[in-house]
Length: 197
Image (tube, rainbow, N blue to C red):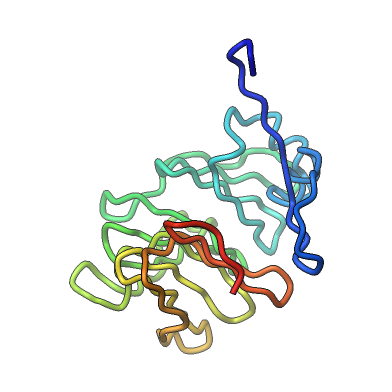
């Protein structure tokens, strides 16, 4: 703004009609943080850069790019704050799975499953020496499948939650930052922009 302050504007994308529409910040907050969004956002200094997933018990898990982790119960009360790292490497992404969530560890070429009840990593898929994942930077869950965006291999790979098998899903000619779906439409964020597939 002319006075040097920053003002945010929020937009949604109507996938069916293929158009961008303005939305209120409250619509954005509810979509991101769940039913207790008013209480949760009143406690946050930065509600934009975090990723958030709502677990089966209504808990909202917030994870910031620097590894700061916050867990809020279904009423919006903070029940845990701390850092989430795996072998001193930052974890990114929140893909809810019951009382747990899946995240990616770019430095370790790994995907992890973290339990909020036990406050520990329960499972790891991949490793620094493995090529199953090559700098995984984002993760999302649809049904019984995790979709992992790999920046170095330019691939979206899947993990079946039924047997933990890993497979190729999409391949691009440039690094991928994120894959997601809206309804039955698929989207990717590449270095060059956002694309509907």
